[in-house]
Length: 261
Length: 328
Image (cartoon, rainbow over all chains, first blue to last red; front, side, top):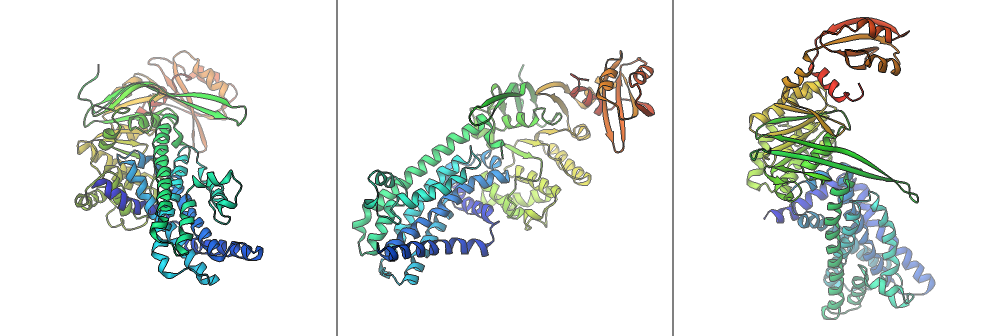
């Protein structure tokens, strides 16, 4: 019961506590206009170059943008605590770490999902693209799995923040790596041979591919393998993140890394 | 000999920090922050760890509350080892540090308390009543719905204390709780801490305010440069210097070399310079029966000297003598 409450109630409260400083009049447009501008940029580049179609770029870039909350918000759930000097108080509590940190992931996943879905809907509307409305429930499910996987990589980055306080800066690079390696704007088979295997180990790659297939009319049975792989990749990152948190928390006790704010 | 009933036991606790500098040619610097600290705190006792900044008070507390691992030595809280039995120790202790950070600024005081109640597993049924009682205890009833960012430093500190008590801990660690608080706020805080003792809580308080330790603590350990240099009741510590006198000399621009020279006068136990507003005062602790006034004035050379006075030593003099003992 305690762990469940920490997961749901604690997760939501910590999300409010850590992100309440953001003015909604700045935060909401940032999170919503970002994917639209990125979609428009690559869709128009694609049109000008005569490659791909609008749906390809809408789905790729909308899902790619789910990585923004996934990575940065997750990183901030630890970095922000460190700057507010609340992290020590949280870590000295007996709360179990899995519900404590995974509870923080839940609002992050919801934000990432909302961002990506808003990007897809807005892209379809702005570019008059052809994604059947009937496919949206399944699109929504696949996007949720993609958002979960990005939160997994965000958890790893959050753990890194326990040791290196500027760990969040890494997010800028990881975002670009995802942009290039996950088939967001260039299909994996069109990338140089060495890049595709890397892309297949990253979050979003399989979710983007599955969402494109669903938008083209594929049924659940045809994409379940891809969605399952995305889920597995997300779970691997979550486990890595939690293991890293555990290890780095221990390291902070040994090397007093938390004392340096 | 360790008392099996002791609430807190520290045995030869040591903590070393290694810092690195430079990117390519790294240099390592090792600092021994705590050098073999040992003490015991009985259940229900209010124990003070007194020392100047950088003496090792916070490092000692962090080892006891499981935030730092000792480099060597051992410690236990309520019989639980702070290295091996981390979760159980955390469950039974409360921790509050000084300063105005460590709270979620954009949440209300009430939401801060609710969040930490969840972390400590306070059941929803108990939460409301417990939070209400604690708000009453720390004098924040009626202000709990306000965001913490609007709280004064004293209010924040009292909220910290309420946070630390949410799960009704048996042992409470207070790390310089009154730092930066105005005199009225500090007095209220001391009243709150005194209330904890009345409730039977075991409290470890670190402070560098002598009067605070004197007013609150049953026993005090004075820590200097990572080592405990004296331990006892406030009366015991006062006794260390009560058999002497203190000579105070107003000076104008006394040089370090002259102060060092004064320390060498036979019969002088310690000498320090205090800045009191516009006035500089040379405070000389003198052994019983020693007459040093003329010699001290002679050692001051051409330094302009104002009023001279003698007084009985205070607890603060004992503290100063203990923490400056090596070089005074």
